[in-house]
Image 1 (tube, rainbow, N blue to C red):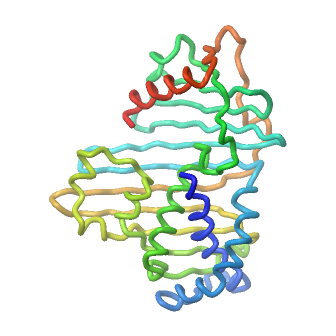
Image 2: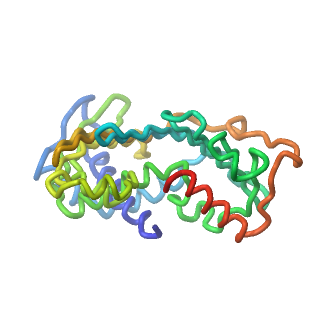
Amino acid sequence: MNKRPTIILCVLGAVLALTTACGQGRAGTAVPKGDDAATYVGTKFETAMNKLQETIGDQRDVTSESGAYFRFDEKYIRSTISSARTGSPEGRVSRHRSQKNPDDSVDWYTPAEGAVEYAYLGPAYKSLAPTPWVSMPKSEAGLTIPCAWSGIITACKMADAIAVAYNADRKVVKGAKSLPEKRIELAADVPFGKFIERRVEVLPASISGAITDEMKKAPVQTTVSLNADGTLNQIVMEAKIEGGGHKIELRYDFRFTGKATAQDLPKLPDASQITVLPDKAAKDDFNRRFAELKGV
């Protein structure tokens, strides 16, 4: 987990290299593809990596949304996460919703001040506490490791998969083009095996055991979109794969959606409506029981 930020620096640094090189092109202008694109990225890799550290970690006062859809034959999941982070010191919230089961919902809220954070539990988790609201000690990691926060975890995992695929074979980069408003879009084919390996979706053994080596080679079409200033706008990964008598369909996306304000953060109820988890042991037990209900 601690290695992930470095990996993200590498892959999105590569994208920023493309931005630097072709940001002045006309809308829709293509930059080199295939071998040429891979070489083009590599020549500016180190400079772009340093620039990225100032962008992805500092994208504050923003809202974002991510979506996950994964189907294996007739089994599927579909969920969304909407999040906001704002202020200095910073408050942040991420709202998780299953599109398959409306009762499967939970909000994770970390206020800017104080030593506790909160969960607001949907009906699927009512057995975890006598009240919908639960308070617990703040996570020690905070935002020192960006990917420790659930609001951007989808972006982190997708970028991780892209990076591992790119480091293994730079030919996964298929091309890039400039877009209106001086934005840039990178296209890549990430092997499905890397998607699994980097846990973009955590699959149960009953599914992962049915995925053949040939299926792992299938491409997951990936696009990464950047704003004119080099900050991340959107990542999308999607594929349809068949093999071993099975069919897989997936689409994962993450995008920044706007500017966050204090109004995006939730209002806490009266203290009598909040179940207090007083220490790390109580918090760990809560997280264990939550994971059991979630099935992870």
